[in-house]
Length: 185
Image 1 (cartoon, rainbow, N blue to C red):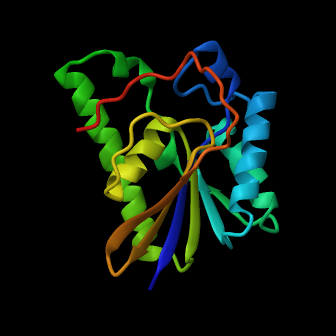
Image 2 (cartoon, helix red, strand yellow):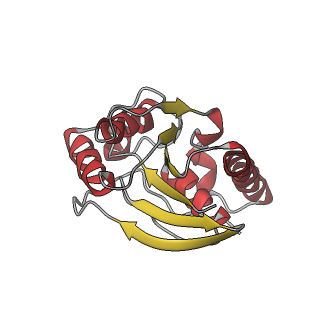
């Protein structure tokens, strides 16, 4: 059975703009972030999405709901496994840093595997954060570095094999003070 997956990062949040990265649960989308989410929803409008899984953090949930409106308000299911990792540790290159990155990756990998095994849907979107979207892409065998707000990665999973199809960017460029480099190995 062929399944389409769409992994995307939330729109620009106030925290992104101000350089406050990480787990701030109440970070709202900026006006630009809402416009990015609208552009993403337009891109996804013909993709026949059936369900959206989302990080429980407000910026991801709000982005997911903007997308869901283009799909007859399909369900948005929050999952703690998609919660962003605390970003302070990304700045340090230590064994403890790598351990936390690996733990985040394993959490995301386990979540994705459980969706693959149990979901009856064939068109699935996952709304999350830069680091989590990166980990999802890596789980699907596609290594990606920087991820822009509302950037979306489309994959097909068929007979246990992942295939990268395309990446979408909104074209609404922003300078986020909170974007940092990652070191997933």
